[in-house]
Image 1 (cartoon, rainbow, N blue to C red):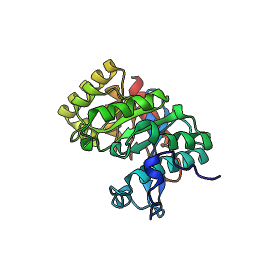
Image 2: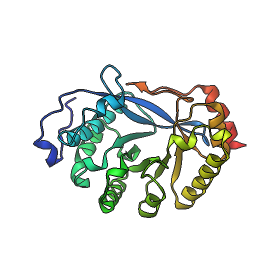
Image 3: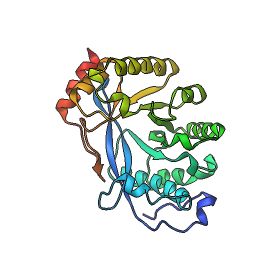
Image 4: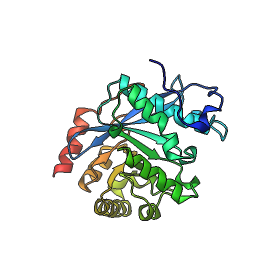
Amino acid sequence: MTRPTTGCTRCQGLPALDFDFSMAFQPIIDLNKGHVWGYEALVRGMQGESAAQMLNQVDEHNRYRFDQACRVKAIELASQLKLEGILSINFLPNAVYEPKACLQTTLQAAQDYQFPVSRLQFEITEVERVRNHQHLRNIINTYHDYGMLTAIDDFGSGYANLDLLANFHPDVIKLDMSLVRGIDQDKRRTLLVDHMRQITHALGIQLLAEGIETEAEAIQLARLGVDLVQGFWFAKPGFESLPKAPERHMKIAHQQALD
């Protein structure tokens, strides 16, 4: 199948990327229902090189092209792998100069690869670089208009803090791993996450905890009522594949969520 061409006018005059890349996928678990809710697409080099190595090649000259190419690659692979549930894709807010125009490539890819737009979620990264809050609001509203989900990544770290909840209404808030790590042994983290769960629930936003590395962390989050989780304890990202969480881990966390 011929890959979709960009519908973004700013990208059309830009040279092609001088490096290639692919995607790894990490499952997101719904503890309340005890199944995989979706997968996050994570950029990787063709030999599995890290996201950092790929992002080091992105600058102001190729940012728009890279952002568009990532969306197409994630949707293409998700379709080939017959991904069920939500496909979550990271994007750079400053790589979107006009939401509707920049979204045309995504819509075309979803159509060409027969992937429902209602199962696309876009994670907003590098929020600290967005000085124009109206621009970010326009992005979120436009994606919602097309039936897509939005998420704010790394919440509780750097600039991704409570003021975002006062100004924007994403569908999902992803707690930064710094709030999750060792939560089973830390009353402060437990208190903060519990309050965040109450706040997001009242606002109609789903809370997702990332970076879970131990059974104790998973159990504590389940007891706090955090339904969506991801991390190495459940499954590491799979290069161009959809890894499954061990049945035992799913069962333990699901039972704690029900208790």
